[in-house]
Image 1 (cartoon, helix red, strand yellow):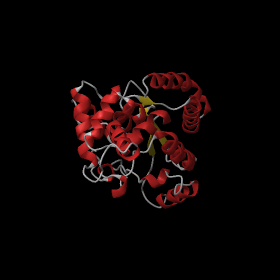
Image 2 (tube, one colour; image 1 turned 45 degrees about the vertical axis):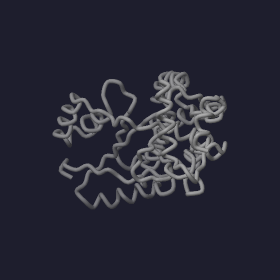
Image 3 (cartoon, one colour; image 1 turned 120 degrees about the vertical axis):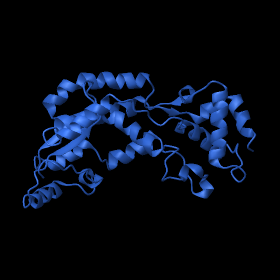
Image 4 (spheres, one colour; image 1 turned 180 degrees about the vertical axis):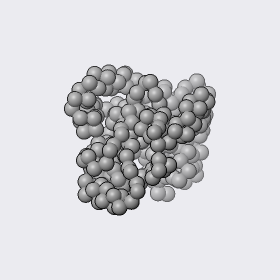
Length: 276
């Protein structure tokens, strides 16, 4: 209203269970009775980039609202869910993604899709300057000023790979007395010993998706691009998407730590025995 308002919606508008074309049309009917003039702004990130990022957020060991990663199985804790097959299947069965928003909107509202892969402008400027610049000029100016500042990510957050190995050592190999030692205590000790040997999380043995899983992953990404952008635009993006996918494969971006291989190394099996 009067170009002064932005509303961050609940996930329900893009949820496969609750979002539907009917919901969007009823929302439009309600808004037609008000002075509001609505444009939907949503973001697009390639699915093969987005899913590992989503699981990263879910598995963060510093997540303030989760305690499962502090507990063993007998205390109600659980292992970190792997992308394949469990996490991937969850999103395959009931996904919340940009293509569903576009499908449900079905032309009901004007829609502006932010491309998070553009190299010439960051997503924040895309939203505040390109999508909403005519309505929110002061916010655009503030965003431009922020571009000149150095924003540091939080440092020192332990990677979830450490927890994957500790969980396997305790729950599958029986190398840790879970009645005497808590999960975070062992994880911290493992992290410190790993660092003492000049290793980082990038040095873990990896378990990677197989060729069938990778092909399915890529095909789903290409299909969502067609749903979001349409066939013509998706065709122009395909080459860049394929190149990005190959680069991520080479970087082992889709892989997890392999606790089995890690614990086959005598030095690590010996390390965990101190907690027996």
